[in-house]
Image (cartoon, rainbow, N blue to C red; front, side, top):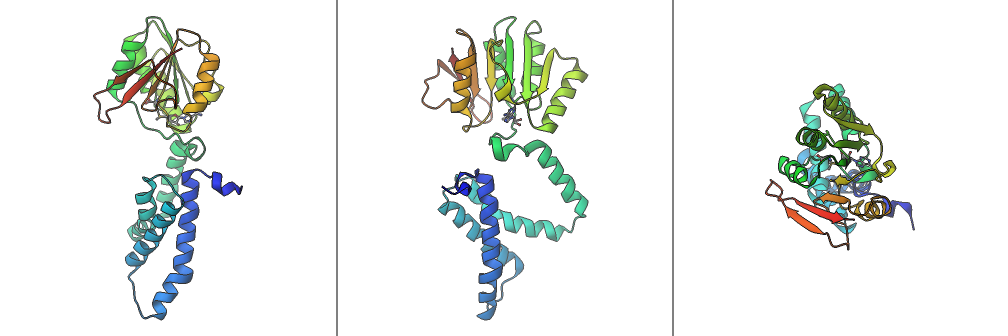
Length: 253
Ligand SMILES: C[S@@+](CC[C@H](N)C(=O)[O-])C[C@H]1O[C@@H](n2cnc3c(N)ncnc32)[C@H](O)[C@@H]1O
């Protein structure tokens, strides 16, 4: 099987954007010119965007890639029209790389647990518990838990450089009783923890469950925000009244 079939959606989208742009420049635009059909640049960009969106559908990308693929080339054109100095593009690229650089591989982007999720998790954590946040982002969950339950032990792991740095600095500056490590969740030994919290994406859940089952002790608690473990019935589901109507899936080991 060719390896491009195994590409994550972002990689496939990049590939089909290149195909759409090449097709438009090499075939469609000259054909239109030859038939005396003059299209403005933004019309051409929309044409290429439509083609990219169709290619995404044909490649069965998740539906939310449709607007991204449609708007990518028109977006490029708009940014060019802004005529920004190239250092701004470099700065934006570096920022995105530092926050989202690993997403193509992990398929777990950064988004943050709501305050209501913090409160709900705090209500589930026993006194003096050791708690891990797998992919701790900016460290908000751990900062909150360590304030609410200062007698516990709190550890977060994060691989994205900028979120890690901000979370680590936050712990240092606030004097919070929690540790943020620059490490992969796959390398963290879950044996010492009474509660493990994860807010990731659907992609790693099946493999993560295998790790949880292998390492967490009987009676401990695995909590997944929003993303249930496929084909495993949770012990309990907590419905949150937050912006996204998130659910906490609780798995008692
Ligand atoms: C959806 S965010 C959740 C942030 C935080 N736990 C919260 O609830 O606010 C998921 C985080 O997991 C991180 N991540 C993804 N894969 C990871 C891995 N293999 N090891 C550690 N962190 C990872 C991402 O960089 C991202 O910051």
